[in-house]
Image (cartoon, rainbow, N blue to C red):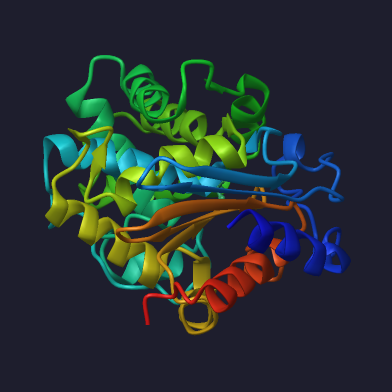
Length: 297
Ligand code: GLU
């Protein structure tokens, strides 16, 4: 595995820096695009890393899987969010309007805002509950990046619009400001590839982290299916075609992927393609699936 990922780092070097760093969140716009990291964590406890695998970055939408995991520990509100790919951009309002405030799936912004609403209802300290879960999975020093969270709040008009629209349809239990504060903080989590690979290994391990159930096996399977069909923005079909692994990307340039039964891996490179997925990261995952033979298909 080590030589495989070292070779991948070499092979994608010419793509590192291509694409565009997300700049609609000002705090993310100044990240140096010339960075690449990759890490693998196997279910049997081995770990491998290459490049800047220990540099922390903003995990952004990758956090939607973690908040969903926490919400599913307490409930399954199937009527409040769907499980179909949206085919629209992650922050689109149009579909939400004609589908009467029910987001297509929990991995687009509207769906993740519903998940954040569930956390606010279920926990006295929703942000802390999420941080506790992430620390349990990946280490005690993980924290929210308050500067990124504040930057998102300042430029979060579209997320506020999504939340108010859902509130108008009666699909939000709590106050918009409180729900968005939870959502912006979860997106601001700062983690490295190595920490993310560790963190997501429960989804490769039937929902278990070090023999402790984080979610039951049925839910782990469902989360993986959602990642496969909805985890990489409106490029999920192409991504399944090229990579063939459950994955979730974020506009910070990170992507996590899961090989059920085997391993979790994380890649990071800040330059994004038109759909919001890391350009070098996507290529690295494509090479990993091809050269390891570990695509699920
Ligand atoms: N916090 C970002 C937003 O709400 C998440 C976007 C993403 O990574 O897809 O716009």
